[in-house]
Length: 310
Image 1 (tube, one colour):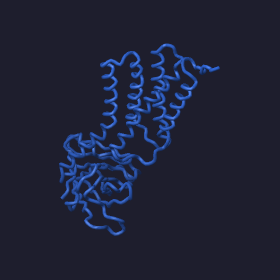
Image 2 (image 1 turned 60 degrees about the vertical axis):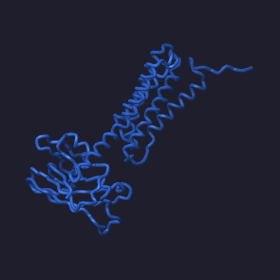
Image 3 (image 1 turned 180 degrees about the vertical axis):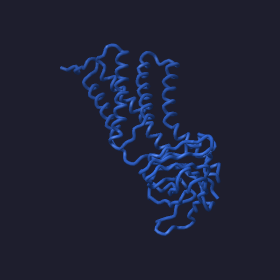
Image 4 (image 1 turned 60 degrees about the horizontal axis):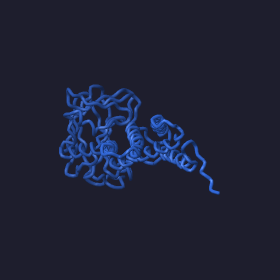
C-alpha cells in the first residue's frame, strides 16, 4: 500500500527539506570567505549580481517553509521580512569573515526578494503588465549591479582623453577617481578647484589615490603636481602602480618635501629598470598614483590643484 507523503501544513516533507536546504546553502555561500577582493570592476559587478538569484532562491524557499500560513499576503510578508533580515544579518557577519559589508549588496538582496514575491503572480495569470513589472524589476537590479563599473568606465575614458592633464579638478565629479587612502579626509574645494586632503597625527600612509583604470604615460618624462600646504613642512610619499602591481608587487615610489605655501613637485618617471626592481613599471598601463604622508606626529593638510604630465 502506497503511503501518502507526510505534510508540514501544505508542504510535503520532501519539499520542506529541499526548501530548508536551499536556505542554508544560500546563507553558507554568503558567509564563506572568497579570498582576495575582485579588482576588475566588471567582474565585481557580475559577482554582486549573484545576490539577485541567491535571494530569489532564498525568498522562494522561505515561502515554501511558511506554507502552513494560510493567508497568502501574510505568508509573502513574513517571507520577505525574514529574507531581508537574513540579508542584513549576513552583511554584518561578512565583516567578521573577511568579506566587505555593502549597502549596495543589501539593495540587490531586496531586488531579488521582490522578484521572488512577484513570481507567484504567474498562478493568477501572467498578464503583459505583470510581465513588464517583473522584467522592469529584474532589469533595474542588473543595471544597479553594473552601474559603478559603467560610471567608472565613463570617468576613466574621459580622464584618458584629458592627457597630458592627469585628471581635471574643475568639478566635484572629477573627485570620483580620487579615493581617500587610510583614514584621510578627501574633499573637493569649489573655491580653488582643488582636492583637499587632511590626515591626523600617527596615521601611516594616509593620503589620496588617483585610480584611472589605466593611462598611457609612456611618452612623458615627469608628472608635475601643483600642491598647496597651509601648515609646516612635511614629507609627501608617492607611488605609481601599473595594472600588474597587485599581482607581483612591483611599483615605483619615492618622496618629496612639501614646504609651507604653494609649490610644484616634479616626479621623474622611470624610463629604465630601477636597481633592485624585478621589472620596470609599465608606464603605458598606469593604474594608480598614490600621494600619502608616511607618518607624522602632527596633523597634515594639503591641496592638489593640478597634476600634469610633461
